[in-house]
Image 1: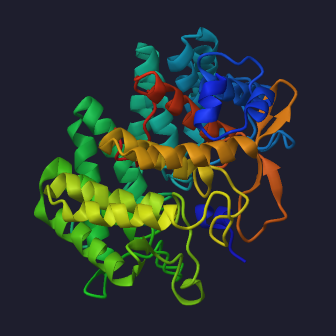
Image 2: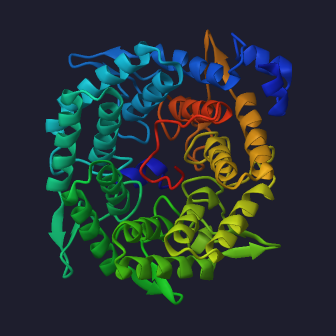
Length: 452
């Protein structure tokens, strides 16, 4: 059975407001105060800190504290996600300890950059693009010349590894098209830095990646679709590995360039998704994959409405056409009418992480409330947040979340430290909720997020 890892390689008042029993909140928050969501994040940080490793270059954290050798360099499960959490903790608390840890971990990443050769992973969530993004985030926070030069070096390595391919002056880093490991995610990373620096070469590389993606799109159902790679034949149409993610990148690229070919391809991807959508009573879901997955519906970021709705939000932005917001609302309703978080489904199992579970859902609805001031979205975000807290496990002075990363391996339960499947990603959400309640902005915004 193919797993996600295989695919990657290829205050009490606040508690009551969340619908969380006050006695449970008191157990989770050892120091209840005026910022209860910050307290949750701090407890997650204390649990992560126990597994920190001093290396010859700096600082690192294993993905699984029970396996000290599980230190990874990928943004998905590895130590770069913990660095982002440390940066947001510094932003929320101004405690220099967190910034020092982030800088020390950046030193470790910089020291290992020479090992990121042409055969290494390049993707946003699997390799060099994610490392470059995190080094850039550290540089922006510190403002130090050394950090800026390190980030610039990482991006130079990334653009230098692109290969010219096809008949449209396109480029790619591997045969993968998607957000997780391929050109769509890498392209979004280049655009993210381009917006901050104005470096024209980054925009040109993103455009070349977009041209290649258009070239390899497959006509289907009156639109276009993209497989994750030519050698992986399962069509997974949603955000992380399929058409929704590629189309989202192309729509974002159009927003930067106003080149019609990018918008036309993004609209063709949206048309394909609309043609295969399951719509019932105004609620929309899109299957996990073709064939035997036609009745399997995920609900969070990777293969669910949380991720796929980003395309329709982006299309509404770049076209000014509100019809796309109707699809965003319908996809959102597909989540709120599903029975989660109290009921678990085949596509929403024992997982509370950013990728597949609760946290991806609650952050999405918090973003919707921030943009549209819809109280129902905020209420749903709070409901899912309460469920996430109820699933936490106290561990000394910290908290962790023990969960199944993969739907196909429900017996494989582990508490991880990283971004998309672990405490760093969950802690980041609680810091964003804390920032929202204080009318502040978080400092960390991932390249694939349309929500400023």
